[in-house]
Length: 107
Image 1 (spheres, rainbow, N blue to C red):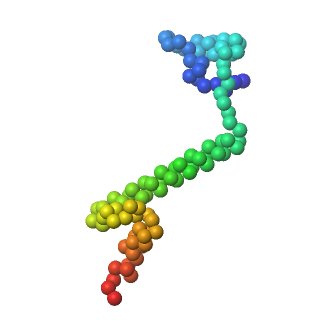
Image 2 (cartoon, one colour):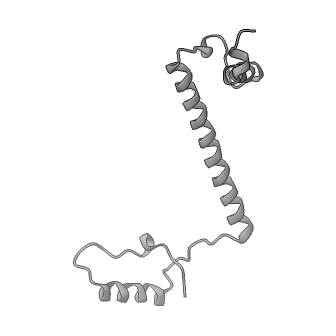
Image 3 (cartoon, rainbow, N blue to C red):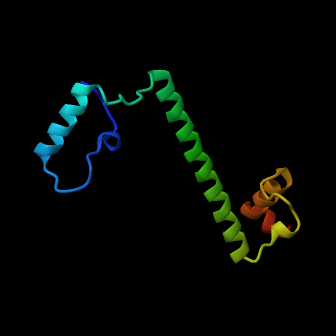
């Protein structure tokens, strides 16, 4: 039994039936023309999974940053004009000041 990519064993276009496709695949198999698909080992699959997960987290982080930029812009808070990165140490301190109610009250 061989796991193969269906695009590699595709028959010529025309009138097709399941029976004709099965005969075509069987003929390719008898002639040894079906190339087996690459199946990575467990460590490679795990590394791919971790890489995809990291990429997903990075996209979510970027999306959250963009949403915060939009919220600040709609609130007429233009920190980007004064700070190159509002997520730097200074920017985070300012954001904490905005979030913290004690920072807004006059004493």
